[in-house]
Length: 110
Image (tube, rainbow, N blue to C red):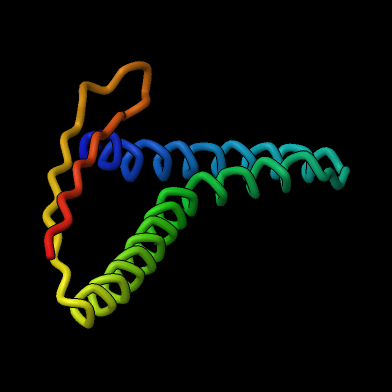
């Protein structure tokens, strides 16, 4: 996962800069001919999206993690009130075709 994330943070912004430069030079070419075109602006917008996408994904991932941590804290507080404890064991299987499977065992004791 870390390797994919690092690749995502390197490749997409570089590709986005290249796309923006292509859109800019296409815009300059069309402008020098005497026309105004929408296509270069759309290409530049796609480049900006490629630059911004990995950072947006990371932000949404951390928001989701914070939400899960808050829910887990609330569950633990309720379990403490009833003097219930639990242990977890999570195992990850091999990633197949881009899908990561996980098994979780939860043991509840009073």
